[in-house]
Image 1 (cartoon, rainbow, N blue to C red):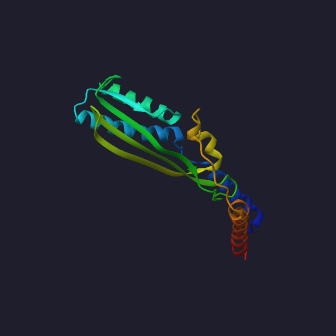
Image 2 (cartoon, rainbow, N blue to C red):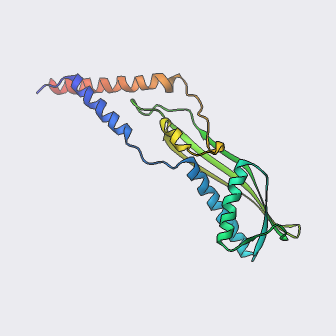
Image 3 (cartoon, one colour):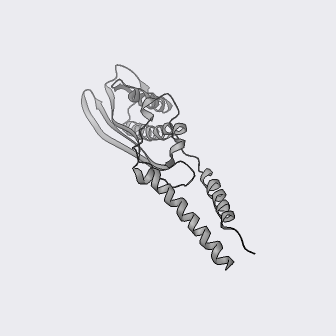
Length: 201
């Protein structure tokens, strides 16, 4: 039985559209950042408990990111029965020298869907623990998370009111934005045509 190449092209089109719509659930930028801060706060609490510190005063620079980190850190301290007092001889100083959400230039990996981008969520923290003005521990921590997400999903991944959880996408070149999808479509059409032509002969 001879099939029309056009019918095969329609079948291929339907397969590509259905496959491009199925995607794994991705973590939001907020969830990634919170996981990084949770890991940091857990490590700091272990250090404090190992040094048998029962009360501590917390010092941090003002700022949106620092306020978020301070809130999560204080929650973890209280969960572990560490008292926060303003006049303690033990002090915890925290700074956030780096927090960044970035996206790579789009790559047209789907014919009939938005292109993919590589997402990177990076953060770094400087932690200093002192007692009676003498620095006992000074450590730096850094975290990095990367994955591939669809460009159209980025607004859903940047949910929340925190401005620092949003990133910019580097613009792609001509090959990524226009020429590459055309090449994909042309290649698929040629393959379908050849398949049904050879099969019918």
